[in-house]
Structures are given as C-alpha cells and as structure tokens.
Length: 340
Image 1 (spheres, rainbow, N blue to C red):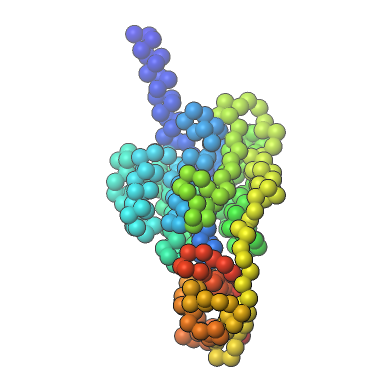
Image 2: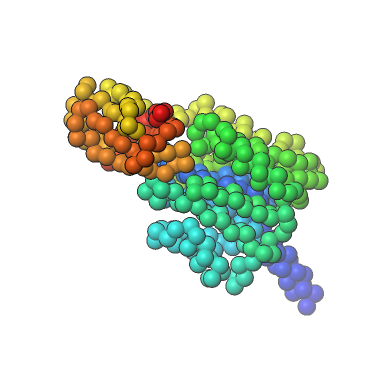
C-alpha cells in the first residue's frame, strides 16, 4: 500500500508539472510582404522528456498559413485542436472561441493563446488570457502580431517586447529576436528570478511560405535541463542570440534570384509606374502592393511594358511596399517606394 501511495504521489506531481508548464512570454507574427510566419518565446521551463526543447513545445508554425501559441496550463490536445481548425481555414478569433468552448480539460480559464494567420496577404491576429492564469498576465495584438505572457514581472515585459518588435529594422526573424531581447530582464518570468535569469529556455522559429511543415527556415532553441541546479551562467535569450547570430552568418537570408530590368517610381495623382521594357515575357508577372501595416492593397497582372497602377482609391501618401511575382509563385523582386 505504501508503494502505491508513493507512486500515486509521483504521478500527481508529474501531472501538476505538465498542467502548469509553459507559463511564459511569447510572440507570433506575420510578414505579409515576404509571406514569412514567425514564433518566438521564453519560459522558466527547462528541457525534459516531456519538453525536449523547453518552451518551444508551445509553438506551432504552419508555413504559408499561420502560427499558434498554446501556453499556460499547456495541453497538447488544445494545440492539436487549434492546428486542425487553422488547417480548415478558420480565422484566429474563431479558433480561440472554439478552443474556449471545447477545452481539452473542460476548463479554459488557466489557458493562454496567441494566434496569427496569413490570410492571403491580409493577416489577422487574436489572443486570449484566461481568468485564472497566474499574475502578472496580459496580452496585446494587432493585425499581424500577438504578444502574450503570464507569471510576468509586470506589464513592462509585454510593452518592451512590443516596442522592440515594432521599432527594429530588418527581417521578421530580426524583429522577433529583438522582441525577446526586450524581455530579457531578470525575473521576467518571476520563477526564474532566483536563477538571476529571465527564463530557463527560449526559442525562435520562422517559416518561409514554401518551407515543409517539419523543416522551417529558422528553427533555433536553447534550454537548460529542468533539474539544473544553481544560477544559470548565461541568460537563455543571450544564448539564443548567439545561436541566431551564427545562423545568420551561415544561412542565406535571401534566396538567390535573377535580377530583372525593371524600374519603379511614383507619379502624380497617387500612381505607381513600372517600366518592364527590358523584360521579355512580362505577361507572366503580377504586381502586389502593401501598406505599412502589411495589408495588401492590390495585385495586378502585368499587361504592358510601361504600366501605371493606383494602389489606393485615395491619394495615399507614405511608404508602400511592392513585390513582382512570376507565375503566381516566385517573388523575383521587391522594394519600397515613397508616395507623395
């Protein structure tokens, strides 16, 4: 009888660890110009047989479609269900509504979610923080990103992540890494304060539109073992930064592409003009234009060698991004232009 009691006690402790794992801070985001989808986060949860990559278990990145974070009282059943709904084409808010209504543990209150989808260049995002997630807890989102966290030092963690993400120049991966650096404060996940660290594990994952589901363009993580004793020698976010910097030096950040003889400039009346006179077979190309928020303003088939388009019914002023795509699948040129 004594042995059964010890065994039962171990099971309850183990289940408690699983149920309360992945209290964390994280971000999911879309770059609607490049079509990249990214995910990054950190937590005071280390690597174990259940979480081999630590906090990265919460991340589900689906190339060309979207990204899902299921954290706080993590249950794999909820993550799998959210994945299934996203593959059916449901928008992020509807996925969250369904997760709440059909929680795998019949109690959505301790859960937290952050979800974004590409939606054919019109990204959408939604987040959810259950009422019994441990404080400090909160979330924030815009149409192309969602940031969320719980057991935090305070709102400054989420605010700093958002500030760094929005104000960093570079690729989506650069901006996600900067967001994590914004949260690198001792005790950001308050459980790691005694370890003189923000977290015990961290990760960054970015998918290009054509990546296989299980082979992402960027998939990096760092985790101390769950049973690690003593103060962590290096903050996991700094260790991840080192891995990321090395990855950048050994990975081509842009696929080699043939340069095409095309000129782009703004003309009066809110129009953009494209000159394809040096290009053969221009009918194979389409032009896509986006605003600063990542919204696709239009896509237009190239039908003449010098072509003018009006990306907005109003005379838009400010920066616009454009892509030139061959046969509806290969981006062969991109850039930005100031509309005055």
